[in-house]
Image 1 (cartoon, helix red, strand yellow):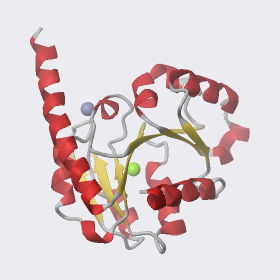
Image 2 (spheres, protein in one colour; image 1 turned 60 degrees about the horizontal axis):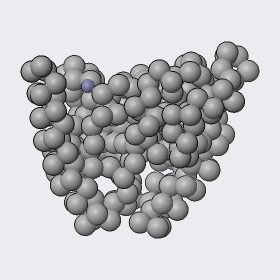
Image 3 (tube, helix red, strand yellow; image 1 turned 135 degrees about the vertical axis):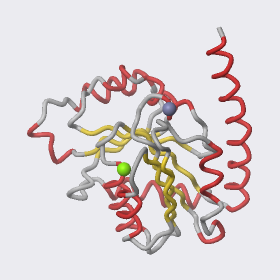
Image 4 (tube, helix red, strand yellow; image 1 turned 30 degrees about the vertical axis):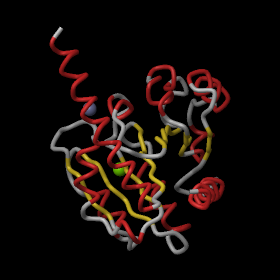
Length: 217
Ligand code: MG
Ligand code: ZN
């Protein structure tokens, strides 16, 4: 089974590079989050709201992973924080090498918090360690509340989960209770946040958590 062997080699090499990234982040005292979700769950909107709320108190930078276009990086750049765009040209996940290359363009001595917005995909980004402290999995209320059961690796490998677009709950067929049950069934240790990046509802609990994490660094 050649395919399996090759895949294992790729992941092993990635582990080594992720270790290097992690050492650099530790040296520079930077808290790093890898954001995972399907396309359209609102990763970029959550980042924008987060920047609006805390980018004056905390040095933040963003690495944007996209299959095509730098639209999201342009949205982030409007908030006057350092941002690096990685365009994967069809590639469906970021890996530790891509992140390492992007780090070269960031003022690492000036930042305390780095967000890596992964390519919109709940499958393979879950398997690739980038050297981050935590993976954050994001789901929106326009998706199925059974998604944790369908994409267990993403929910198992994340430590934190955000339910976004809570403003739409009255209009969609989404049970928050079932979602929580499903998510905690896959990963009982998940820290859960509910928010609407659009209205700002719930954003404070998230940004308080972030600033606490940075303080505890
Ligand atoms: Mg995006
Ligand atoms: Zn992939």
